[in-house]
Length: 119
Image 1 (cartoon, rainbow, N blue to C red):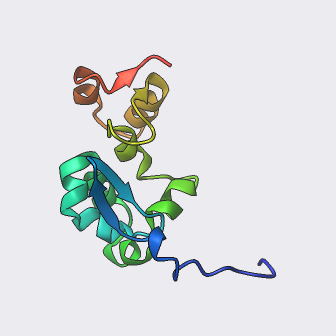
Image 2: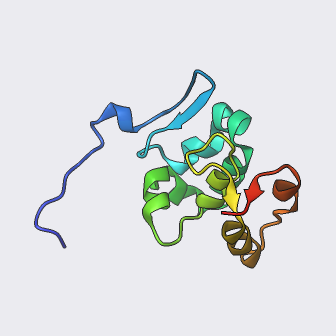
């Protein structure tokens, strides 16, 4: 256990979902439940909505954050983010596609639409 912990929950810029200038922004402290139920996320990153719906139980999604999910070794939300053309991940690499297939994801449609590229 660390000697000190810093509570970031009061930093309002780290929570919430917004679209501005055709760019989807999700704060790191936004809960997975908020991501799952967001109309903005559904419209701009439907694969992320699906990923958020599949992560953990409902009670966990209420507390777990998108930022926490990204930095963990599990990273269940990463496939949904990598399938979003407007994400900071850009297009999905063939390595990402292989990883997703190994976990049962169907990436054929992503490949057909040009989301997958050689690095």
